Length: 261
Image: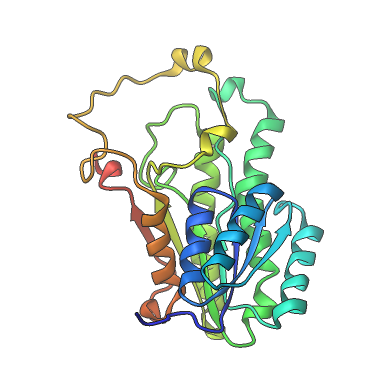
């Protein structure tokens, strides 16, 4: 099998679980050195061990990606260790509080926007000086929510952050094209991850704003169930590699036709 990312260095945020973990392993399998970024040290240790078991190299960077100083420090450590940066997978995020707009506290809004949208800005901003040296690929995890789906009542903060990532990614793609830096946005639907752990749903309050929807049989037509993190990782590998060398500023939906219902 061709090694697509030999000698390249990638940073993956939210690398401790779910899509981030699957992508880190997939990129490592294809030759990249991986900077693993998350807040959960034990999960990062497990991913690092898995990467090293297949002969790869990984660096653990426990980082709050919504903190500018921590993100800057994170990149400096990558450069100090490996001397370069080629791939940025800005994937960290939360669902946050799921509740009607009138019940959503400003602090809860800020928490979701900070973890999802501000973290994306910081992850990209502080990567640019390093990527400008020889070009590279930036991949942002957005969502079908806020871009093609608005039926998930109560997710106003989350959906706003996700459509914000789309706009930011497209602006970045045009601005950074002259440096041979590509920027693309992936939009997963339901994926079998542990994101429910950072989802705080107020079911009682949501009943007052529910909009009844009757689905045809099944809500994921292609595979009749949520996607797997490994399927998203395959898309990340494609966008990170030269197989997508002429693709930038594009959004790619990976949802088994869920958002078309």
